Image (cartoon, rainbow, N blue to C red; front, side, top):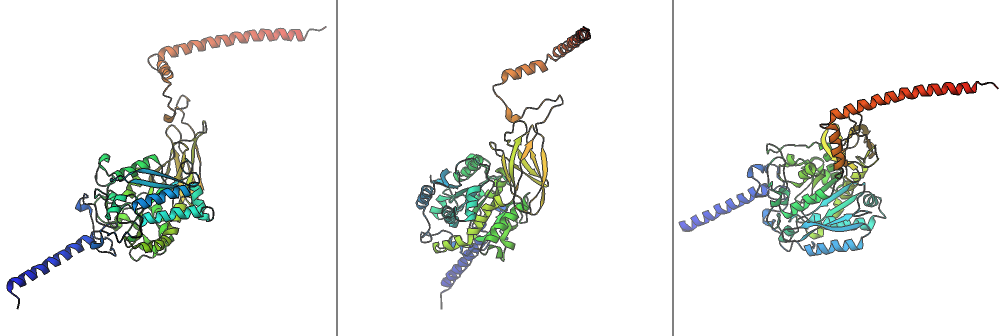
Length: 499
């Protein structure tokens, strides 16, 4: 028989083991979009009621080096990107948008028939490896780049994308997290909770944000993207805005372009091998807040602040599957990735805004009646690209400060619509054309001072001068009329002289 103190020790061990198991299960139930919520986000923002169920348990969260076998290291990824740029230089450009905490460049592959040039074409971006322990996306983007390089002269879909879209691929947003085999970056910050948020105040000081986050924000200030998608792991679903709610509850929270995002999500889901047959998500798509709310996410920030329609794509139930599964995952996602990019030119309304005065492009804005969202045209070429769900009638409105707005009705039942707007300058009450704020000539100070002189304190004098000039003009006209009449009589007399 065991001694009483030994029994007590055994009992204590069993109680401790039960507590640890309960604690582990509680943590695993709070996993959100692939992993734990960032610890800096207040706990009341974390509704774990509808959290996903991962195939791996928490003990597998920190991936060992064995799990990375077959995946490219950061150095190997960098080499692959640079080698691609040399091999496919005719349709690509390689550039960096910044560096990670540990100084690794955030390399981007641009694919286009005119890479680096500004054209009247939409731009699309794919971002992989947002979370360090979700590396499938970084591998798939390299697959995608190579496939487009090999097939852009053979496959019609590849040709369509290369010739009509500027595609930008960022294989790894979080190279430090990948090398550390953890979700956050080198500072242990979840990058998908580090963006400005409309519902909660998170990290308002941009300088205090992570360098990877700032790199993305600056990237979108420099480049105008029409749409994008970020790859994650831990589930199989296409997720769309909004990601959060005002009251922090789990419920459907659609954005102004809810129909458009459902359309985009369905393109990816139904082109996928099995995403649309999900038993957890109807049609393989979900509103982010209806799944569970999160704050500081990248996709909401893209839509609100950058005019970019972004999806969050969960492409693997297993966050870090064996490298042997990567070719299979590529086959499952290939058509989804291609069709989502191609949808930019296969539907929606596209065009340019011009001035009727001199025909130059205008950086105006495009709105659609009934949708509280504005798409801005390019500053240089005046081009715009407005994604819309097909099979509906829309009233499209073009506006520009200093010009009269115009609108027209379109139907999107059979492909995209090309619609150019020619705007007329606004006219003042006196009949003069109002100067556009974009036409400012900073060297015309003397002209401005002269106008102010005429219309300022000396307005009365100017008016008197006009009256005097008008009076003199009337006298001159009357005198000229008398002289003209006299001369006419003389001429007539001459003509009637008989010989």
